[in-house]
Image (tube, rainbow, N blue to C red; front, side):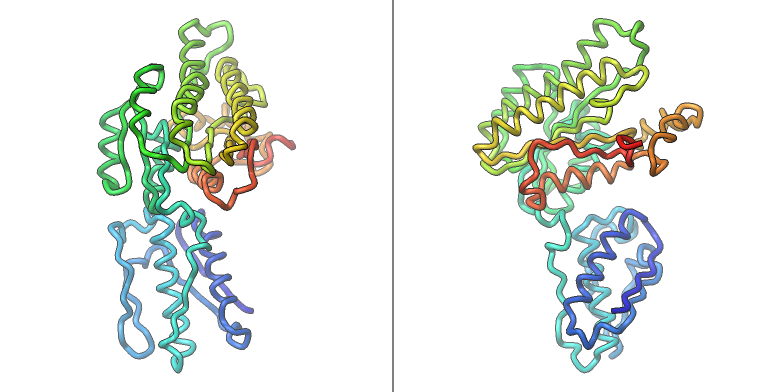
Length: 350
């Protein structure tokens, strides 16, 4: 088979598109696999109609963000790939243009989460916001928990059908329990909310210590325990931890202690909730290039020494954390339980 993908655009989309194209091609009879697929300038031309050999224009997928291809969610990307492939198929085999080349949605991990109900804490910005949008785009109902009313309004406006905002201060024990008692049954929980106060050990205050532990571990304990009656059997819990749970970094003493506690909680819950088939895992990234991450690590003098210990010589992208979390939420990870998924480019083996 000679299958070639010429693709300009968002690099993180390329592997997904390549797998979809390759598997779609393999669905063709063997005698028809000697053709070449060339998708020129895919991301820049998504909104342009394509014309078949007969001169008739096929029905193009509609989406609300055709003018911004990089914002397309996984289902929209899959629909457009199917649309483009159908055109290639029709041009190469016009005598059988009535046959429909279908791409099963199982090729797209996120499709597995359609119609699921998932609660995400720390949803207002960064990883949490990106995850909420991806889940909503996949057709999941997302209960987005954050402190900021403005951030929640922005999320709700992005997809009012799938995103349900819930304003909470997770540091407040009883109000959180009372609010969470009203949520519907859940298929997934993502404990993403966290704080990081980076200071030398001798400068950390009691308030700094309490803030770290109240949000990074006590709130996770409280939210998870409060939601146990709401979690369906077979649900998935994902805790957003850090490589700092197992590695030491200057200025991270309190932060690292809370993430180590979170990793321990993850393993304990994986054991205790196993009889209900509730899986509990964590994602443990190194520096993640959120807006804050880019600002804090833009100085080569600061980032250089850490990058020198990462074989891939870069930091983690937000989408990479989102994708790992989606995998752990989905049935694709049905036998993964009690694990910490290290997203650190090989730091642990350097």
